[in-house]
Image (cartoon, rainbow, N blue to C red; front, side):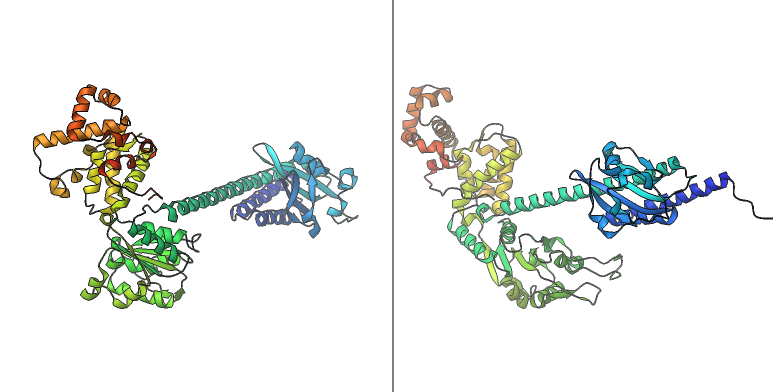
Length: 545
């Protein structure tokens, strides 16, 4: 007896199983890559293999037209087709956002103008189904397929199945757009940050016009446009890292990485692996290969801060990198070529370190190609008030305060202090003063105690109570006269006294009121206007830290 044909239920079960298998393949194709075109091509290939699909096409809306993203079974020229909204079946589907089913293509006039899209076969009747690809209920494309014509085909079921596939394509498209948007945002942010860094570390942002500062500025300008190794020397807190940034961001490598390494902060057991990287299994815990800082700085600049603290073993390997421009990772034998500019900085006496045997002489001469000495703050007192102006403005803005200037006694304290911590100490002192200041003027008592005591600064001499009171009274009068531009009547009211008493005090202290009536005072900076009282002539600010 002949085998019995499977009933309708068996056919339905087989069809549903095939569709579920197809949806799994479609999901894997769309989620396995961010290349949407190749994923769509795989989706069409899956439909052709399992669902009697003869040809398939995916179109997406761009610039008001439908562009072909993927085709299967069409001629190659079909990839160049552009379909306007409302044109043909596909254009109508995207325009209306509703699917269209054509049971017999040969009887549909809408296909006449698009006949070149599909090779004609008079022996094969086709059915056509086109469903929209929608995002946020807005059609952004279409999935269209040609099926072999079957009189008993359930077109409603086929349309719903293709609708599920188009929904999965829509989600993949949404993910791709989110990834592209994030990539654009990161690119724009990266470009913006690089521009900010370049502006921040421009030559014009190095504060100071004193002799030592001008000499340092000239050296930075000379070496920036070269690939020469630079050694920056100076005491702690003088701004050596600022100079390194200025060299990099004004060099030909400005668009490449700037990698910083603090040699003093890394233990001897880690410094070599951090600089040169390591291979998998080089030591316990090395589960994967890791790039070192030299590789991370490829084509850019590597800044080794406090290089005087590096151990002798690493010095040997560093010497080879400077000589041969190559190295091996820790635990590896593969030679890695590098194109990196090296900038090193130290606050140590290198000559003494060489004599003591803690630093290799040959490495020193390799580093000492072009040396820049950053002067300590005590040797550039002419720049001190310029720095004070800059820090006052910066921290007032950062902490949301309105502080106009620094009083004369406070200026005297700043100028008299020896600043062992250099610019870094001064920066911290001014930030503290801004934080504790409750008015519009920085006074002496707002400055750190180290600037106010004789033991710490070595600048305050022993005075009697009478002289101390007289000095404080004189400072108050000077401050009032500066505020009122030398108007004694206004100054008296400001001090809550009479003009006669104020005149008596002015004569007694030998104050020349005419000095405060000059109109230029009002147009100077916060501290420049008060520097005249100490008979100091200082240059104007040319830059910022």
